[in-house]
Image: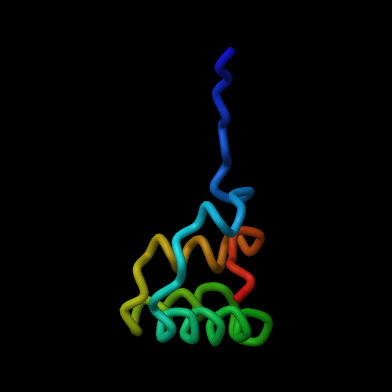
Length: 71
């Protein structure tokens, strides 16, 4: 008997995610997330865009914090 598994990207386990290879992007996202309480979401998003972070990564990190990686 075969069943289908619907795995949401937000609930995927670490083993199912690709290993992070871009430490620069990680550091930029961490800076932006840390600045949200003082500068706001818009400014953090503008910073990431100016630094060349892909929009899908910026949105995932800023708008969906539960989808962020732990390391």
